[in-house]
Length: 362
Image 1 (cartoon, helix red, strand yellow):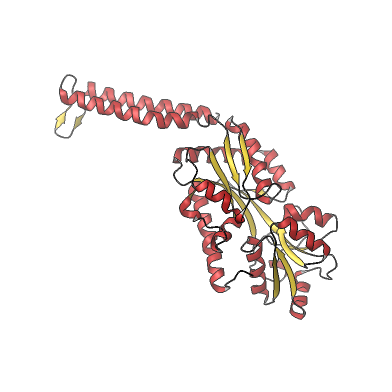
Image 2: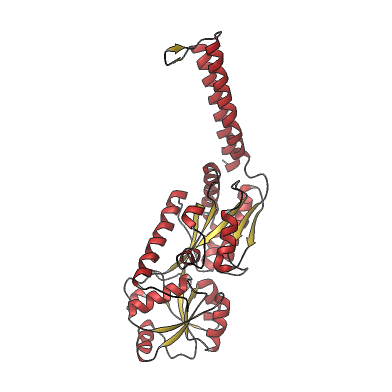
């Protein structure tokens, strides 16, 4: 049964319930408080009119959900074309368009570490036609004050979509092939690492690695992972943490070297690559994730409708194959409430880390 057909059935059921309730009050004489309603009195007409008004007031909202969407949906992406958020969003939007019967357009609003897109989304009309991509990068940016948006209170979660590990990579000229060799080298001579920006997940992830390994390294932030990879290939910086989407083609071509994956398990895209945790830094874990969010006051019925559509899209074999090619995985089915809990967990995790390891703008 299609999503739209289910919505139409829901609308029809709601209207039928209203009609049946009206009939019951008028003809069965339902007692309401001290008065028994039956056809013909002023009180009966008052009760009848209120039930009819109630049914009429509910019908438009139900009908809106039944028809939604009736025009294209815009997904604000808080990063430039070709970025992880952009590629992962577009991997879903095409199939989501087919599922909903309306065009779903990715609208890149890069700038200010994602703040441009998220602020635009927070102030958008909550009618279901402007939603946005949220990633772990935006959450850490909020905590580091580079994203001036109160994500939990300004946005409404729709669904977690995708998770993806990062790779710990080094410049080819550095004689390091493992995490143990990296730690030993860093203790003897501090290294220079690149990130895609101050307050980014990879910045905090590398600082967490430094803290857990007991080493010191110098941070050089860039405006995006693409620029950082250019300097990593040339040897201007010596190592970085970056997503599999960016790193995989560079690793396979020999332009950079991967020494570990940051997820708890090895990645299928590079099964011989050990995890950071199994390489001697027990408990280390870092993953990127992407989900969809909406303006805070978007009707719950529309949020649920999109959540169900996304769940169906992510279950499609062709979508799973597309994600796997980039080293990513579709998130298991989840509700808006579960996604909200996950976001809160990420905020708590990084807030606790920043209390232990306070960072200042370099």
